[in-house]
Image (cartoon, rainbow, N blue to C red; front, side, top):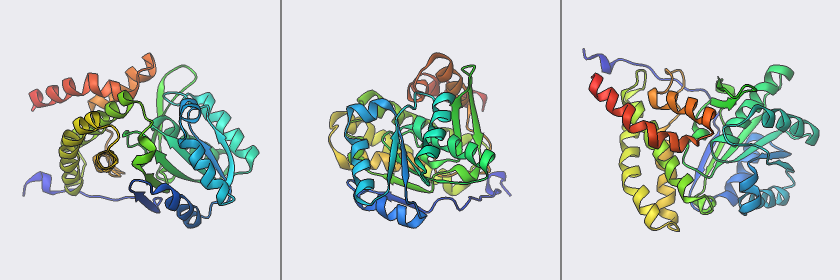
Length: 291
């Protein structure tokens, strides 16, 4: 029997709901709060997203309308520096919040995972996170989180319990995302999909999703650049990013492009989308030559 027809797949039960579609935030967020039992939420995000767009204020408004607003912590920097994580934990505690809402790209989403992990380790309490991405990094799809330690090294944690319990993919919230960030994280999603086709341990049905993601990314990224206000195209890209990194728990680490990108990103403060642009092509070519 051919070896690639052997395998296994398992996933944890942390995820309670994924909502997607342009404008879905207003209905999805209250529903997820009810599902997860969240009464008082702390928003975790970055300074630029809070100060330069209306994305965070829209989330705040919905939380206030549902008597669930506990505050906003917007001091998460690129690559999730550890001090921001420590400060966020303190703000969560002082606000007496009982649920996190991470808004933005991979940095605030990963930082929130690490906050949950550290609270659980030190206090024995496990809190939920609703992830609301504004890029195509797909950090919301995993229970892996990278952050930058005190020495400037990129380190990480892996724990099924820190994966987001709710995900909202609303393309309206991406309109203010800078073009270079939007498109480069789209190539990051392409990086996820391609590497998952050749790294060991990825179940065959997930590879089918990756092929579909690659096709949609190739079609829709140029369209999104040409028509940046097209919500349907942006929504297709968000779904493609989701398919590129469908939860792949209990599998081996991601491939060479990700490994190099993590090192470069933390050391030289380069966004992960850009590292995928610079490194992905060469690592894919190296793999093809090796095989």
